Length: 618
Ligand code: ACM
Image (cartoon, rainbow, N blue to C red):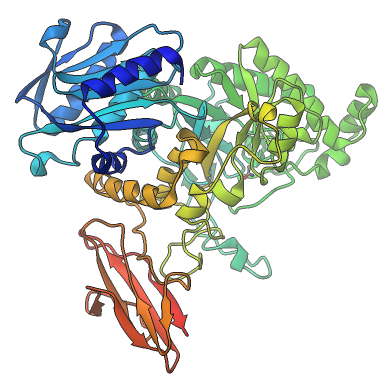
């Protein structure tokens, strides 16, 4: 922490009186992601019936208006003032150069509430923390009052990302905005919008109307899990599927994101995952063919040819994309591009000879470098999946490491910027149940990625030196949507894991603590309920071999739930618990002279059930 900020912070702590330890733990459980430094004071600041907010500059007013809208939802009126003396809550941008550009100081004092930062983004994050100090609805807090506290906070990582694949399944802009709201609440700042795929192209490009006329629609969609089909006897639903965003809609989403200090990184895939492009513009393939928008999932050999026509096409597309998105990055995909079609192509052979390349893989490197040069001419930087390393990468490219951390480590060693997004820890299309294909879960692609594993992630790989860590730009979770057909299911897959992502991205690794994090999650669940977010109800804890105490011929069963006012129901006969089975009220002993299966569920106050957890003992 820089000295001036520290000094200001110490003064604040003195103003709010001496820290109170129990209160501190309690307050720290209310702010997620966990702030860098939090000091609790003694007492409260009562907010009057009519609240006055100080804001003078455009950025200050912009943030004050968010607070005004928030207070209105709580049934309060708030007005803005440019007279600091009249205010209950003040937003101040102070040009302290040593303040982190996204950092803030939030203090609730006897005399009022103050948020100071060196930027609008910093104020916004201070505001988000302040909002978390309010209850999910004000019915339980009359009169409205805020606990005295001093917070000094800043993010660990610059790129705090979440990706949404809108190509496998399409989501309307109303939901994209809701997704941006989720991100903003938890101080995530980079929305990676996966807009093009084999199964659908989702962005209007004026120069190429067939991208929306043809590429945006598939004839039908595979039914069920692709892995369960044995002899490729695939079954389809026979229903035409698709959609796209107009440029006007994109502009609306960009403005919505900007207002929340979120940068959008659009992804335009090349040269692979381009069946949908070829369905509309088959002349971009290395050989003529009857190309189709794909109707099932996986990796396809239909990729664009590295011809001058293809460069022309992508340069025209990227020109429109660059004009729509003000952020500095454009993602060009680059993953999973089988070279079968390139190896058979005389044009690709000519490129290999002319450019002195070794093989078709290196042609992809050459292709990317040309695209990168073009992006630079538009003032943009290139991001690609870690496959872009394989054909040779320029130092200017940012690498998104998804096949584990290997690509990210290699890239950081080369001095490339890295965004860590290993599928092992950050692919939110993976299941949250040890049995991902359990009948208690909706259909999903595979795997087991529980909250705890997401939380455990450290983007600073131990294989890199501290000097190399500075190339780790940040971290991101990805939501691929082959099997995620509805917005409800997006929410189910995102939550509560997005809360873990938020701390991985914001809070220094050394400050993280899973048990304390669970308390913060517990506090957030009613907030998620208030916004009608379909989060996955966490299972009860305590039914694992580490938690169960065996005492000669008995086992002590002690269950717990982080769901506020949630109840636990259990069975001892292997059946799935429900509202009619045993109610857990206190720890109990069961004899272990024979094998017994204990199953338990949490039932949330809104009646939703968790998946069951079970254990067989002894
Ligand atoms: C990826 O998951 N194919 C980047």
